[in-house]
Length: 340
Image 1 (cartoon, rainbow, N blue to C red):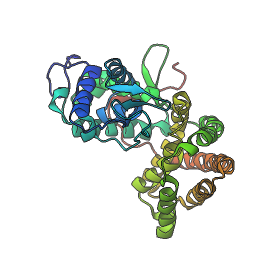
Image 2 (cartoon, helix red, strand yellow):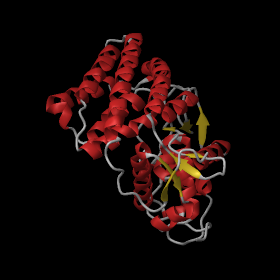
Image 3 (cartoon, rainbow, N blue to C red):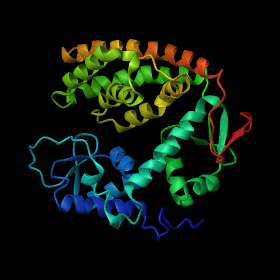
């Protein structure tokens, strides 16, 4: 399969250059107004690429004066008054120009569908052993170039879901109870630290909205939530609350340590349900302290929530282990864990 071609077979523009063109157009026509915060992670996610091309595209835009640095995480769209507050808004594919044909790729919906399916597949395999990923097989499975698969592999390596063995094969798993203990130990150190740094910088109304959402979920029955509802509530506590810290390296380490969250999603799929009410009540403690301005108490409550979550997640992993692995595509090949 030709590595120089994208989803639809056309010759591929370098990803960073295509992203730069799209963002330039979005800034030029006002979809990205002056003062808007643009950062690496949402750009990579929306365009379906790893952080590397997203980072390079933003650097090019800074060099050309379209974006400017500021005392915070990410960059600002140039042109705002010096004393204007940064505009932190949820970026969309339309705002970033990710739907533009100038990208020379398939419709973003198709790219996003492939990325989501790939992530769900490897996450679903993690608790069931060690697997090698056949790059050619994955490209054939999704009918895309190996370049696209490599970008997906690199993106998930950044997140800690994959790694390369000593023969440079892409491998994943197994996720063990010891791994979960280690990941949660890291999270207990880093997430409260990020919360203390981020909380004073959160946009007005954020905490109240999260509290309302959590209380509504409990009132509706915390153990009957859909996986989408659970993911949003988890994202609020473990991502959104922390994202305003200007320490991007801290956030990267946290993201890599959150690999154990995949166990909860797999548990839901295998068991057919996901008891979540205890975690929701722990969320309320964190958010309640934040609403009262007690940031240190909120950080301690988050630490305790993570300690309890570690025990719950280890039990879920043990429960999953008695079930057969799910049906997996041919590009995932089971290996001995001693092949490193």
